[in-house]
Length: 148
Image 1 (cartoon, rainbow, N blue to C red):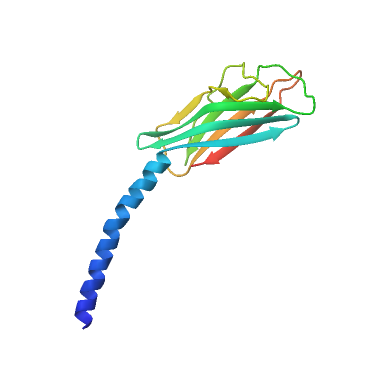
Image 2: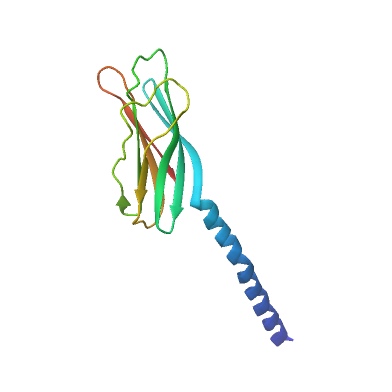
């Protein structure tokens, strides 16, 4: 009796491995492209960005698809803000990929922003968005991040 049980156990184990392979591939495909909303605040400013995280065998990218900058408590300021992006993976990191010095601070969603890409990557990927808010005097800044 022990011999047939070992054979049956071996067949069950092989069948389980065969069924697990498509699930792992599906998880990789789902992870390949995600959209997330990240945010940060400082002083009387709040920045939000909808970022597309793209991870493929040839590299990883983070793109600012849309952004929204809100001034609070009657904060004055112009529309020369910046929404910059960077990506890090393991020991590799890009510098900041910068937006135009003309991002709008009206509390509404606006399309467009820079993309950061990294062809050498290893480990956990992190996407960063840096907001530099426009006001008279020193411009406050904050950074939001997300793992993928």
